[in-house]
Image (cartoon, rainbow, N blue to C red; front, side, top):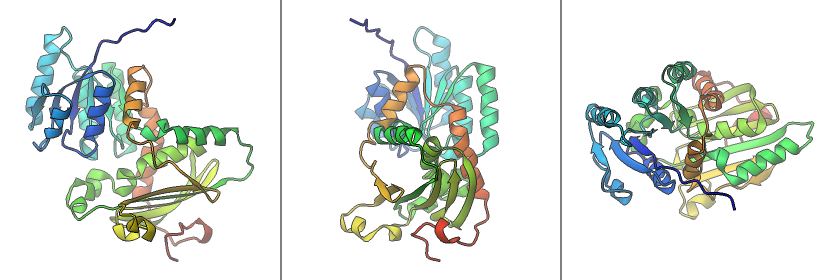
Length: 323
C-alpha cells in the first residue's frame, strides 16, 4: 500500500471577506483541511465567516489586519500566515499581493490578477526579492469538460481553424455600475471583470492570439473577434438582462453561458461549485497557476480595453450584434 503522508494544516488570511467570491475561497480552505485564521473587509457584513469557524480574527481596517498578521509572523511556532487569499476589488490586487509576500506568505489571488501587463513584471520582481509565490485562480482550467475539450483539440489534425462563438450574459442590477465594478479604472471593464477567465480558457485550448478586433464597447456590453492559432472566435459579453435569450428568462434564470465549436454547443454549465477547491489542491501540492500562466489573458484584456471599436465585419461579427 502507498503510504499516506499527512500534511500539517496551513494558516490562511483572507482579504475581501465580504465580497461575492470570498465564500468559495473559505470553502476551499476548509475543504483542503486548512485554517482560516484572519480576515479583513471594510464592510462588516461577513457573518458567513461563522459557517467556517468562529475563531477567525476579523478586521474592518487594513492597518489593524496588517498589525495582526505581523504579530503572528513574529510569534513563530505555527502561528505565521502561510497563504493570503485575495478577493478584493481588481485594482487593489497588486497592493494586496505585495502585502502577502512581504509578510512572508504566498498569495492566492482572484482573477484578473492585475489590470495592466507591466504589473505582472513588477510582481515577478517581488517574487524574486521575497522568495514567495503568487498564484492565480484560473479555475476553468480544472473543469473536467474543458480539460477534455483541450485534449480533443490537441489530438485533432484539423487544417482549418475552428469556428468558436463565446456568449456570456450575466445580468446585474443598477448597483453594479455604482460599485467599483462599474468603474473601468478599478475593474478594467467587463472584459476584465467577467470575461478574463473565458479568454484565458480559449487561449489555453486554442493557442495564442494572432489578431483581435473590438466591435462594441459599452459600459455593460462588449463584443469582438479573436483570431487564435487554432480558432476564430466571435465573442459577446454582457451584464444587461435585456440580452438574455427569451427561453432563459422564461426559465427564471439570470445567466446565459454558451460556447459553440463549429456550430456544436459545448456544454460546461455544471460542475462549477468545487473548482476553487481543485485549484487550492493544486497549489498546496506544489503546482498551481502562476504569473506566467496569467500573463496572456492580462495582455489581451488590456489591449481590448484600450482598442478603438471598429466597424462590424461580416462573418467575424457575433450573431447577437445587429449590423
